[in-house]
Length: 270
Ligand SMILES: Cc1cc2nc3c(=O)[nH]c(=O)nc-3n(C[C@H](O)[C@H](O)[C@H](O)COP(=O)(O)OP(=O)(O)OC[C@H]3O[C@@H](n4cnc5c(N)ncnc54)[C@H](O)[C@@H]3O)c2cc1C
Ligand code: FES
Image 1 (cartoon, protein in one colour):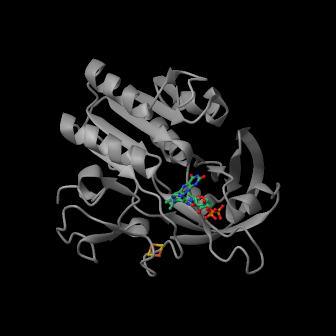
Image 2 (cartoon, rainbow, N blue to C red):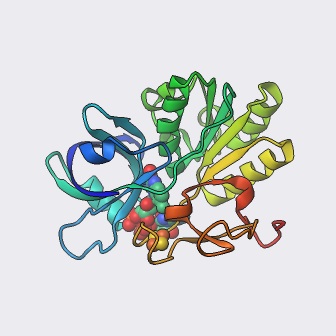
Image 3 (cartoon, rainbow, N blue to C red):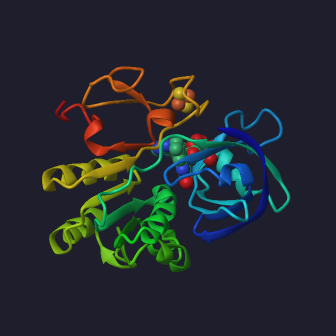
């Protein structure tokens, strides 16, 4: 893990309230893997006090550049959105455990929604380089909330979009696209990142279909390095495979977990 003075190269809006920032951070770029994240200090004073965790959505290793995609939802993302080229952002990374690879040769489905899409873009690119057939299924409330195809297309052989209001792609939930993908193509592994309810639904579908599924969890974070225990998640297995028994810290034990490890709700079997 490195605390690097990342330099902002560009920062542009790519969808409604979604921004793509390119950072020169050669030390982090040399090591960051798909599913890992950086914790970025976006203000020079005491506010915002906490750093902003963002997943890498892409890396240009030789150029020493990492890309992050973020939605403006509050003070930290607003502060980052307001910065322009040349800004220096102390950035801690690479943090967390990224995605574990799928079985050799497996067809893969990536299921994303909202701020969960960025890590899947980096992972999809990597999977394609490793010759995995990849489908990217993305859900959003409305057409304007979808990232542009120039960002989605490189991550998959096939991209399928869904919107809640029917303004683009399939009218309905991204889980309906996943059910279709499972029935038609039988992917050998599923990776998911998005709102909690969506991940819970995807986890249930994959467990029922007996398809391995990894989810990338997001939670409010303070330290991002495992010391404050502010990002605990209850585990279904309770096998004590983390330092905190039946709890895991998303920032160090994740953010990528096997979906079967997570206790998704009080009714979830343990
Ligand atoms: C490992 C990790 C990777 C992440 N990667 C990305 C990424 O690539 N792109 C991106 O846009 N965001 C990402 N996030 C989420 C981002 O860090 C948070 O949304 C952050 O809190 C935004 O800070 P803020 O001060 O702008 O908004 P805040 O004031 O923190 O939040 C504003 C609003 O968003 C809601 N909110 C914030 N965080 C969450 C959350 N985790 N779950 C549910 N609701 C939430 C709050 O309820 C509030 O209404 C990631 C988070 C983690 C932990
Ligand atoms: S954010 Fe502090 S332990 Fe995870």
